[in-house]
Length: 506
Image (tube, rainbow, N blue to C red; front, side, top):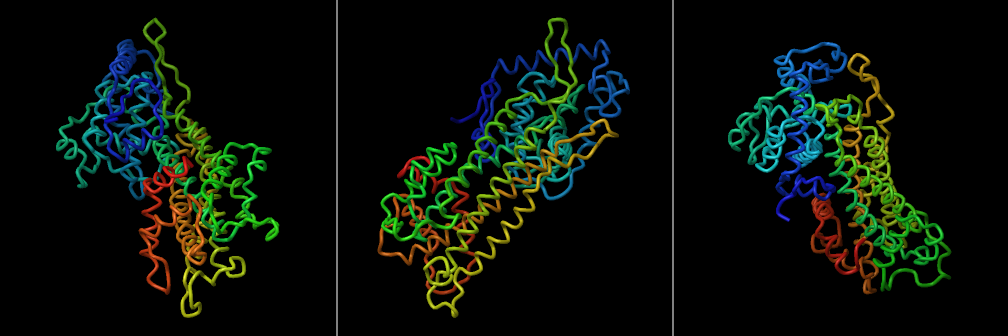
């Protein structure tokens, strides 16, 4: 598929990733264009009649009681963009900005915002031509700020990246051959409104969570094998009598990953049961997977919804504007807080397995997985690094959605904090990827001490993939380059694809 056609059918998170990260083009279907134009005609009628309609012929927020002339209503759109572009902090990643842009296009394509087709097509061109606005990451309570900075570029202001350069927004648009917009009534409000910021950022975060959950199972299986775990904890009969989808899936994944292993415990006499970080992998990883899949459902529903305010409907009598609150981000705020907790748990249990691998009191392996301990520290400090990352995640997992702060002179007296919830979850995911990379590297080192026994069907492939990038440790060497290689490995989906080609989807 060379492009994604927005035609009213559901957009999935993998589509968002394809556009945001891989540069896939975006097109608007003709019937979608017609819906946008039809809705816009109602807005123009409201202005012509000077009908009191929030955000179209009135001011915003607490200023909704102020009536505006047609000229003022158009000027308001530009003023809204400029005044709301007051974000702070480090800029968002380019893929996050592109995901937000795509989410905005999908939102407006529902045909209920009253925005002009020309404006939506300008956003599409910015995506397709690679004009990526510079957007500060902090300052949103759920909407407004990020899209304001994106919209600045659309009207020839602000800053943007184009072909690897950081330029003034007007210059970036000119070099891309895109004419800046002259905004009309309601367009400024529509451009900063809705949940597109949190939904775009959340879509990429959840896309990464799906791969993260697969790596968690691979890392867990390798640690299980290196620690000579008791395989019957993964017996299908156990999991059928507590049939959570995630638990069943993880148990099946583990059985396939360790199938044929000569290391994994084959005797029920040797050990009655393992530590919880080993025998509860299906239950813990499975619960986290269930929460991630719930997040997929919520994020994709939000992506394909109309979340502007007000929304314009065709009532057969010239249209009606309904001011309500589809722009409130509570569904995503709660979901991304829960996602952060679930992902933090994947990292928490991973760190516990790392500790068991390097600890001679629990591993039955050389201390810190290196010969000549004392002279060599081996993998001692990698567990410290993992401990630091999971400690950070524990703080980041505190829900921000419960901490509403009134805004706009009490007109907006309950806000979702959905965008910071999404950004917080992104950082938890990044930290968790690092912890799992450390476990994968540590487990592969632990497996060295079991040679020449055969590894499992999936764990053996994972071991070889790791060894293609990082050689085994025989004595101390500078460690961080190995970690950097492992981080790159787990952030690339290719290794997952190779493992799944051999043992099936994880």
